[in-house]
Image (spheres, helix red, strand yellow):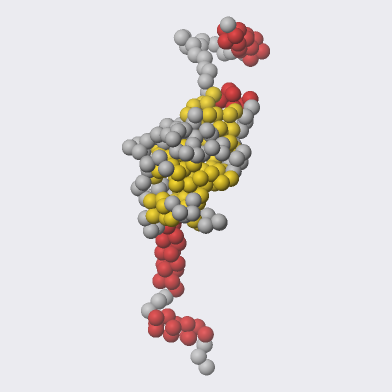
Length: 231
């Protein structure tokens, strides 16, 4: 009788594929999946339609280290979302989510607007959570077009408040465009909208010539700095 090993060799010769080529095919498939994932991440969220970056707003680290901080005026009418990963080039009936990796978003008088200042997706849910959801059954979102986050009538800045949690170092905003109730994501854009940075600093005009002992010298220096700040 023909053994299983001999039968497998015969099949491999018949189809012109060895174990090595099958492994290569599998790796090629994984590589293709990676390309598809990168393609989905192709959108952008920038300072303006002509910009390629977003300039994050600065919040004092001293404040965020002490307690949660509310930030307003972070996003304005010039900030632009431009999708480029929608497979067919355009999508009718979009579901768009705006989320943050840290903290919460507050705001209901808000919409996703197009360059003609018309709402293409209205607010649906998410007040006080990390994600706001927008949708519209009849409008179309297209690759390469410019969209912005405005008020519900798209005639002004959205009234959004971002709650930065205590100890956070930054807030990254993510916009996802998809379709359906489960929101199959077709395009994603990201930008760091808030950076938490130190506001106060101290320096010396001459190099230190000896060690500073916390119990005496450094404690006195800190008390002096606090007295100066209180004036």
